[in-house]
Length: 317
Ligand code: UD1
Image 1: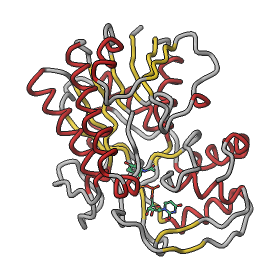
Image 2: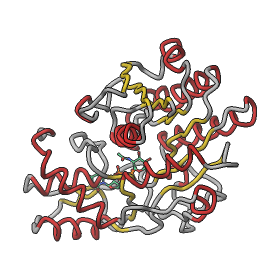
Image 3: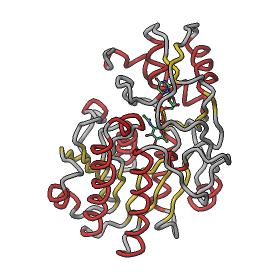
Image 4: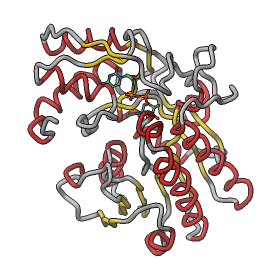
């Protein structure tokens, strides 16, 4: 059994990863500063978990925590496009300086491999769909620049220092425990909780923008594969479903599941947003043996069910 460290382990994707690693019998160390993560996300049985309240911007604090670690799953980030537009300095400090610190601490601790949560936002609005990893990036927001820089650092650490790294470009991950309560929250968490509260969801733009929405268990599955696959160090992989839906379509799906007929409010498009996003996932299929495990509609049903049972936890704001 391995010692695995999850940065952002109290966050949405990080906590799903922690659950899977514990289930597989690994010892897990969590590094989280609880800026966007929360203790409620952690599993009830924490016997195999060590929790370190630490900020990835603080390298000195990180270094001892990384001693003896086998695998690092780097998921601590400020994960929002609009937040990065409003406050580019904090996004830069956490997402770029923090990532560099995680890589330095991993290198010094001789970690076997670092899995980095990269982002499809790197592709920007280039017209060709689906997006292939070989396409030139075209970031449109400070957040996209942050996440792309992290990828470059990860692959340079593989080349220069021999630290094994794999970057997973996530496409719009959704699922249980995504915090719906900030204006920066992921769109599906916002739509579902608005409908459950019988409030109109807000759609920025005309709702015809599309995303390759990916249920969180598929991202976790990809992480497990990326930590084991041979000959992938320094590389970047799209992790998605390989199918996209518009916001208008998704809202219709959700209204069908919930039996609601709430009219959305259409507002101005958001700065830094891309229009369409769709992944080619052949490279991940070939190199990681990745295959989505949970279909989009099933993921939506599971997510809706979770929010139904846990809405009280997320007080409205
Ligand atoms: C998301 C992730 C980002 C990730 C990227 C690629 C979040 C918060 N952001 O960015 O971390 O790197 O996917 O995987 O999970 N919208 C509405 N109404 C709302 C909220 C959003 O119409 O209440 C719209 C936005 O304007 C945008 C679309 O929905 O057009 C998606 O927005 P969002 O869920 O924030 O995701 P991305 O910006 O695509």
